Length: 95
Image (tube, rainbow, N blue to C red):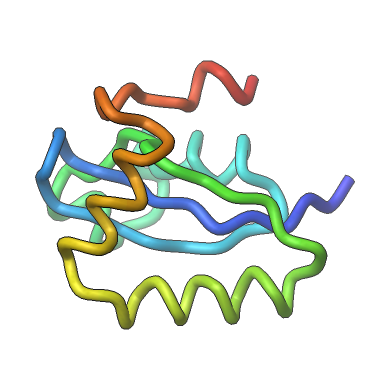
């Protein structure tokens, strides 16, 4: 089942952030956590799912991802903390 999602991963609270979009959030975060793809997340140890939002379709998810990537860091942190103030790893809540 396709479930378009925008997500933010963090290395630690207020640490390095990564923003992405996917049609399968559980699988994609699992790949990030296991460093299955040599990427930014692997290089900087960005593995904790701290924010995600469902979208109507992949086009909307990609547009939202691009929008969030243009935001300044303070806005991204405020978005995360509005939904996840303790920066809990949300991966286990989506299984």
